[in-house]
Length: 428
View 1 (tube, rainbow, N blue to C red):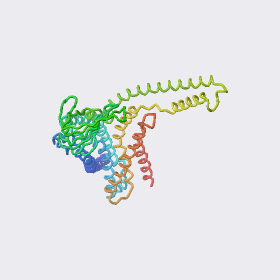
View 2 (view 1 turned 90 degrees about the vertical axis):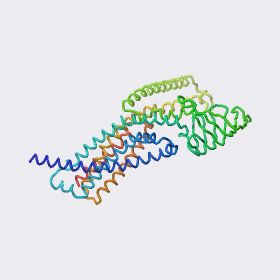
View 3 (view 1 turned 180 degrees about the vertical axis):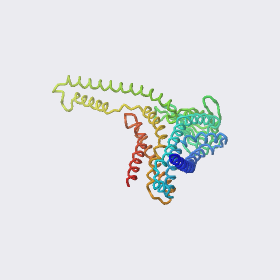
View 4 (view 1 turned 45 degrees about the vertical axis):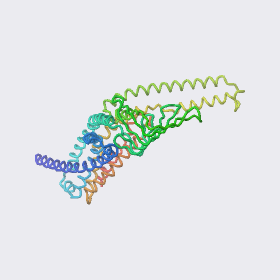
């Protein structure tokens, strides 16, 4: 009898697992296609229209896949679980299991285990694959920028290149149509250059320095120290040098979301030291102002307390400064950012396991079009989860404590809601 029960449960687990994997494949392709098309459109706007080598484009698109997987896997897991349970409920298979005395826990187990497995996969993507792919992405993009500097210049738009603002006409290959250039590198003098066209050529590979050959330029120079000081000149051609190193640094600088958990922990410890130093400086300044206020009050006399006296104005100024220091929060932007990203890696991975629990109450419902209903439910829950996570990220600088609890709020809300619905469904 025991062997037969074990065999029955094994058959049930294999059946549920097979249905879950098939649904997971469908949901994964759906979400991956949506995120991938969005990424491809971004590449089409910035890269594909620039006549870039197609193999380089393929590599860049491939290296962007880990970022897509980071959200595709959790949402696909949720959709697969809801579709499977909804389908089983529609076909009365869950009712048959309950009537046979088989606990629904037996059906939930393979789904929960797959949630844990996919949670681990998501964490590996976020902690290993994503940092590596972003590093390779930056390297390839920097090489493209070296070979084709106009890749960062949009046609008929305003482009920022270091201290230079460049308003361009049509941009094609290494040529720029009519353009206007604003040079703001000097604190006093300003230059505005307009030209009928220009051509960009590489000068120095190491420093990403380029030469801009201008056609028929008109140069307006102004003197910042004098309202009437300006000069106007024109020529048939002009050479101007552009420094694209700032554009390269945007892709060589690593953001916290692209760091591994080990690197994030190291960065957090470093920023804690900065926060402690800033806190000590603020407290020292606060004590100084408090002593200054006490000394002023100690030396003041009744005659000095006239409403218009300098002493009263000084006291009010000190009190205002003291109030500002007391209200000031000791918040280190990067410390909060690093902490939030570290918790986000873990929370987003664990969401694969947490989100499937909200689908379990579906097993107690009689559904029509259960697979479609389950998929629709997954879209609603995924949207709510995404909104809560985005909202939590916007609030990390509003708290002085570790912002990790904000990042975990979506998981906690979904978890508590799942437990409530499951307990309520069992007693109905």
